[in-house]
Amino acid sequence: MQLFYAPDINGETYTFDETESNHCIRVLRKTQGDTIHIINGSGTLFTCEITDAHPKHCSIIVRQTQHDYGALPYRLHLAVAPTKNMDRYEWMIEKATEIGVESFIPVECAHSERRTIKNERLEKIIVSAAKQSLKAFLPKLEPMCRFEDFISRDFGTAQLFIGHCAEENNRKLLKDLLSPGNEYIILIGPEGDFSSEELDMAFQKGFQAISLGNSRLRTETAGLMATAITAVINM
Image (cartoon, rainbow, N blue to C red; front, side):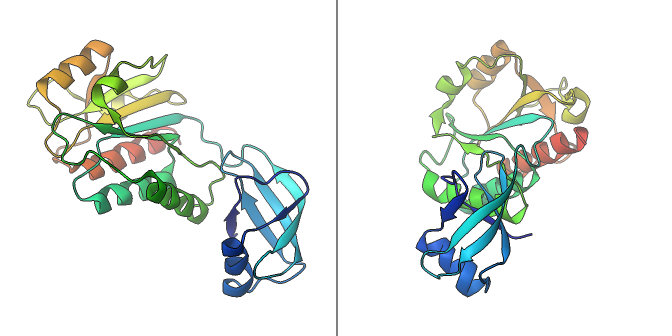
């Protein structure tokens, strides 16, 4: 199944913009009468038929609609400090989207070496990864926020976890702490780790220190490992 992305699709007919039309007709060689599938990023899968195979304005008619297509039985919010090498962060965003995440929250910490990101580029990566992995839900990408602003939020009843590198013996394996079917917020720090003040603030807020195994992981690897463990526990 080949997915197309159209966040503004509404009603029984739709016309792609020139970019998607060219991809559909010239690259994939779709023709009039062919069946294609469209996602809106909010969980709806549209099964459609091409009615006008024009490479600049391809039109379709919706034949079937499926809501909550591929909905996950849990909600994971991944709050990870962007890495100095943005390629590594983009890789994490791509792979975590393929596995399953509800939202990404880039967090600027005291020891962060990167303090700005380009959301537009990351959003394109998310769309591409969702289409490739056949997901109808696109993770929300929040604007980058300061650690103090993030930690002051109301997290409701979500399970709160923090992965850090400070030496302590009371960390438990994430897999042993996750309650299936729940909402989770997992916080991962920058290459320079969290400051002691940030750790204190997180613990006071109710975050539990977690272990992802015996290896010391890079920031982006830790984020992806946490995503994968959460997915497996909820299978």
